[in-house]
Length: 448
Image 1 (cartoon, rainbow, N blue to C red):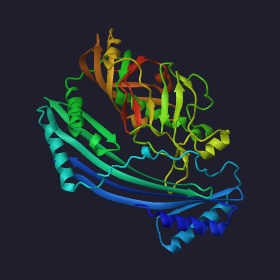
Image 2 (image 1 turned 135 degrees about the vertical axis):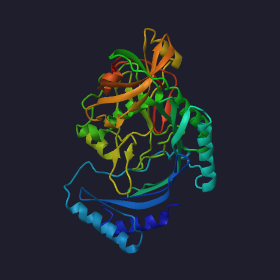
Image 3 (image 1 turned 60 degrees about the vertical axis):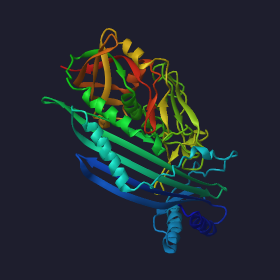
Image 4 (image 1 turned 90 degrees about the vertical axis):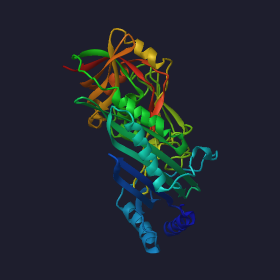
């Protein structure tokens, strides 16, 4: 666990060095990770890592200097304070720098989920579990091999204190499991996978995730190309989350103020379909990014970003909030070695009223269900432009007629979300990004 008294000593020494008129902030974090990577019936990688460090911010005469270290001897911590002071001397005064004050209401400690099972299961038991999942996948005679199985668990701790009297600590765990399989029929090969990320290990149903990965690969066998054209399209939850992830950085007030956001100068304007509500919620029960406070000590909150297609809010930390003369939304994100930037916590599209099957029925004249993308990392978050390969199914009268591959969709993310006509009721999270299935009115598809 983090040694709070050690960091309190650093804080006291810094405050004595700079004087009570200066602002001092200590931010310390510690992480422990275990990851097992299994491929084709053998170990591909295994590692256990731990990291710990402390960062300090000193605000003197309106100038903020920062420094960090992961050496915890007296000489290093003395140098830490000295470096922060020297760094501040080279900066201009900045009226927007500030430190958080303690909240009038106590932190909601129940939001900080720490599973005590972390690190307690022996390695051989975890390996046995992975082997069992591989065997379950290979029991399907259409699965040629299991490309990759990844299990990981992490424990993170944070301690913040400052000269405004704020002192907060939190601990949290995250567990994840993912598997990808190769299905074959004759000379045809298709790849599919599935994953789950959660705060509590018992919430991962390993067999269900494995079965979904098998289904996602096997169901694509017999895939065909379709003709180029405009199609009505349903995105499943996974694909919808991938597109939302392109947009999420544009909600950051830092990106807006730097004019590198798609949403700059669009506050209180219509930016997408009135069927869409997009929310960021750092207090979401069980959310992967849920916490009682952000990385500046501000309580997290639920923030409506888009309501019925209208942009209602940006996400703020203290600095960006001061620039816009608003309050922080509790979205500061940083490490001990970095500086604060506002970032989403648990961001999601609010669920609608349509079942998944009802969305498919809207494709009565023929349309596409898209279940997988390739090359999404090439999408441009600043311009919103994307061009990605996709797999899925051709749908007719609400029924899957045949799987589809070798096609490409392209466009702009705001135009895409502007074309949403129905929202499913099947909200699902992939990590800290969530979405239900979405029906897109018309989308340009490049096929044959």
